[in-house]
Length: 69
Ligand SMILES: [Cu+2]
Image (cartoon, rainbow, N blue to C red):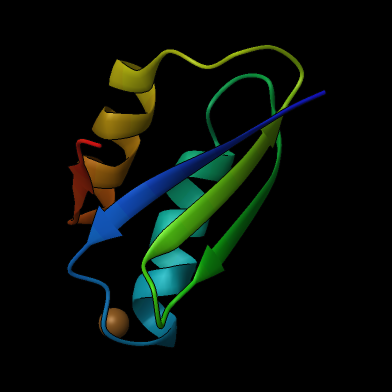
């Protein structure tokens, strides 16, 4: 298992958390998504390292932006 943390911009409420969780959770190989609304931190557990562009696309699909670190 691999755990990766991303920073997502624009989430303001529980609905935002649900949208991001659903989209990122739908990426192949993702087992778990934990979103901290207060900080915008999204912790993703997956079977193997994820393609950042795939995560970015999923976050974008949900309507938010992945922040480059
Ligand atoms: Cu919201």
